[in-house]
Length: 595
Ligand code: GLU
Image (cartoon, rainbow, N blue to C red; front, side, top):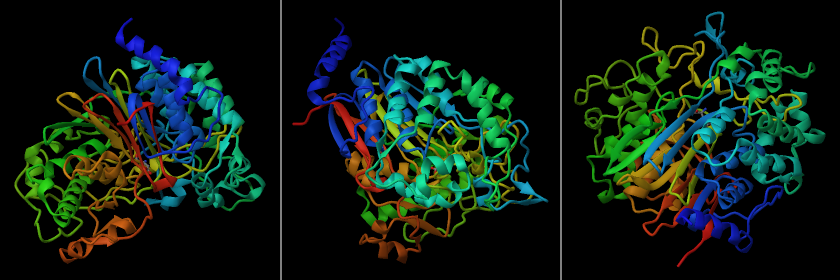
């Protein structure tokens, strides 16, 4: 018997011993933010989803199978952050070849879209009216991402890995405070759509914490997707239902909410693809940092910030100096991201140049160790890096929403998946497809509604068949070509600062992965004030940072909700998740083992 086959047999035999989640079970498990052991690991924001991922690993699935199963379950229990109506980016380290692959599952505009998608009478419509609309719905990419990942690298079929989530939707799960609050936050707009209202506001109120929540329509949709191998969505009945919902938003006639229809067509679904893309790659302190390349700005912006920090011995800095440098590095990287990154199919995005050390050095030149830069800082020119030079005008990054989810998986063969997926806003566009049990995305609001500066090319304007710029940064860090750790986070544009902070926390500041994930957050995105959590402001270094001119604004309450895995030199995995944010995440390993 090969060693891996022996391990599968052992794991299957020990499932009963260590506790496993069988398909069909709907356990509400207690959750822990850190787990250590052998055989593979899963970290997500939700206990049921993590348990399902672990059960797939125990049945001989690999990290890819577990990632898809976990994502499918998150679509059930965390449906306001992600789901089959949305998109995402899947990053995979393949142990067999030592290569990192990525799948671009980003939602795409209808072919009927133009640069003025979000404009009326020559002016942008209010952002909120874009959010709850048919206009903002891009072709869902998540189901195709799952199929592609499984076909290329999985050991199990789509049917097998979607089954536990289907059963979770059918049998129900326990409503927790996060689930209830997310509905309460959206109650006004959810109430405007009978299909959303009936599902999420039974009796006019969000479901009560501790009660069981079932979504039989979603269970049936999952089954139909799996049975038809997605045909029903991209070429069939589910697709028709999506298109009808976008073109004629099913609003309660009594509601006064303004809900514009969109032009998504069945032909848009049929032509949708999930391209494999070269990952972004940066070397930081001898480690290879792989992440998502454009159309996400995640990889280039995290990478540029790290490159800006590279010449500085961050490990040796005082905490105040570290935080000052960290804030300055993302401030500068965001100035460049806002100017240069968009869908590479629609313009020449200087991905390689943004990630060059020479360019980063030309930007780091602007940092004063004792004085914060004044934002918005103007971008540099990555194609022609000149020390301390800037071009044109700078602009702060969008505030963005805070709702997305990140999961991380690893298996006994050494494969790792880092996968961020979303429906954009909390609750997406607010519209449950009638009879189908899932919310649609409003991802197209990630485009700029109008050019940032008249006369300056803006790479992130809508166009037919284009993908909006993302900030998602599912990341895998290799040391000597082998997995060291992987991480990612939700949080709109603050994903980038969160991932950069986790990486510097782990690599430079001697924190464990779970402590790096838990650390108080600051997100400086080329604005006068960085968004910070109140725990960040409570640190003793804050006064010193303010003295140096760092500005802080205290919204939102939480920034990000990262997860990760790490490989220990003895072959064990650490799974790590949020101890507190979003009600705490859930980390688990196949065979828990500590000494
Ligand atoms: N749509 C966002 C992006 O792609 C993610 C949404 C969020 O995290 O809130 O960057």
